[in-house]
Image (cartoon, rainbow over all chains, first blue to last red; front, side, top):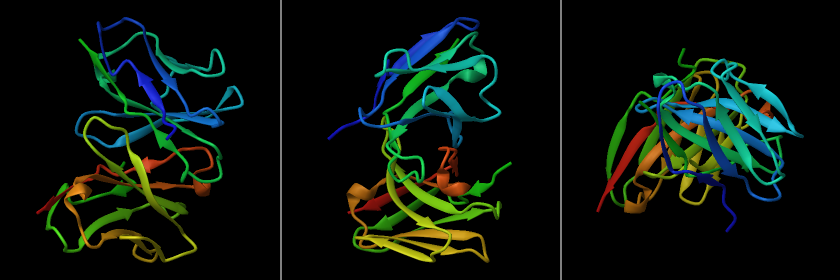
Length: 115
Length: 114
C-alpha cells in the first residue's frame, strides 16, 4: 500500500540552526501539506502546496518557514532559524485531489526537538 | 481560539460496547468534517467524513452524526474492539477542505478494554 514517508523520524537541533524536514508523498498525488502538533496540543495546519506553489498557509507559517519540491518526488519543509517553540511533531500529508480531504494521507511524522 | 473542541481527553469502553466520541465546533462556515485516528508514533489516518448537507454517514462499524443546529458531531463505533484503542481527532474545514486547511480538535484517547 502506498504511503507517505518522512525523514528523519527524530531531529535534534540547536536554537538558531536551520533544519530541513523531508517528505516523499505518494507518487500520483498532486497536493501536499505540512501540519505540526506541539506536545499535548492539537494538530495545526501549516501550509498547502500545489502546482509548485503555496496555495494556502496559516499564521504559523511565517518568514522562517519555507517549502520546496526540489525534484518531483521530495517535498521539504525548511525552518530557517529554529526557536524553542518550534519543537513539535511535523506531519507531511498528500492527496490526489483538493476537492475533499478524504484522500489526505499522513506520514508518520518527524519529531523536531530544538534545544 | 478553539474552533473545534473535543472536551473529553479520554474515554474508556468495554469491548463489544458502543464508543461515542464527541466534537463541537464554533465556526458556522465549516462545511466538511472528518475523523482521524492516530496510533502512537504514526501519523493521523483518515477514518470517516461527512459533508454539512448530510446528518449521518456510515461505514461499517463507524457512523458519524452531524447536528448543524447544535454545531455538534459525534463518532459512534459499534461494536468497539481493542484495536480501536487510539487517539481520535475531529477535524473541520471550509470549502470542502479544498486547500487542505483542516482545523483539528485536541483529540480524545479511546481505550477499549477486553
